[in-house]
Amino acid sequence: MQTQNQKVHLPILKEKKISLYIKREDLIHPLISGNKYRKLKYNILAAKEKKQNCILTFGGAYSNHIAATAYAGKEQGLRTIGIIRGEELKDKWQNNATLCLAKEHGMHFKFVTREAYRFKETSEFINKLKEEFNDFYVLPEGGSNSLAIQGCEEILTPEDNVFNVITSAVGTGGTIAGIINTSKNNQKVIGFPALKGNFLQEDIRKFATKINWKLQNKYHFGGYGKVSPELIMFINTFKKETNIPLDPIYTSKMVYGLIEMIKEDFFIPGTKILAIHTGGLQGIKGMNAVLKKKNQLEIVE
Ligand SMILES: *Cc1c(COP(=O)(O)O)cnc(C)c1O
Image 1 (cartoon, rainbow, N blue to C red):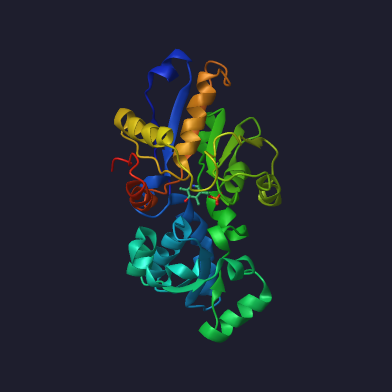
Image 2 (cartoon, rainbow, N blue to C red):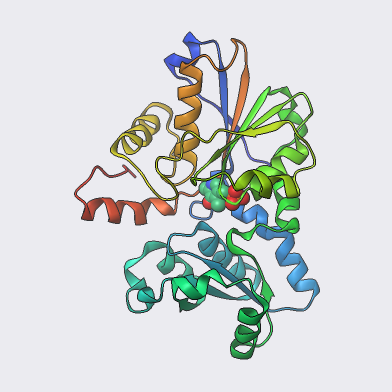
């Protein structure tokens, strides 16, 4: 599956002689993150090959991966189980847009305490789950395993060789590892982590076969899921000016950071940049519900 590259027109790009294109992976599906879809592709084939009819995975209440797994499971005729962080959600998941979306697509939830969730990848925990649910195909949190990377290696196509710089938002690092592996040695891949902390470098190295990449750690806005009124304003302005919607968790932080770097002359004039829009738009509803409660500026849908 190949998605289109959309040229972005903004005065700052003209002024700095930078050309910026956005790869619209968000258009793969209106609610399901493009990169999650790609991460699931070969895992679903593997589950079917193993004659597994059930996929079990993990995530928080706003997880794009949880929403995507539920959707793909329904589409492919597989049962899905979501181990959800936060036992308190047991009685109020109905107020959460992401979990409602997953439930609509047939996902069965098991809510666990934050404490138990930390041990979710241990064999002890998995064995207990097997007693409860029989056999299943396990996908890690965020969906990043080697088959997921293989799927993300299909994001870039030979036509993208004309770009000097490729950028992606980073969560677990699986998506960018796939992008790095298909990039050319003369291209530079820059990742924008949506989380605070430097542990990602190692995770990416595990799966990436090249060294033409680096992380820009300045634009996480306080950490995973954190937003500021300035970021929300940026999302709304960017949509008005380019007609491209950005999500509050990942892609807006990347584009915000990228524009800041362009303003600061990080890139030489003539640089051609391709920013990957990984999707995440299903998260807007949930974020708006939180912002509304706090009486803060909301994202225009
Ligand atoms: C999950 C996600 C990412 C991060 O992908 P990783 O492979 O975990 O690094 C980026 N953007 C969006 C929209 C996502 O949903």
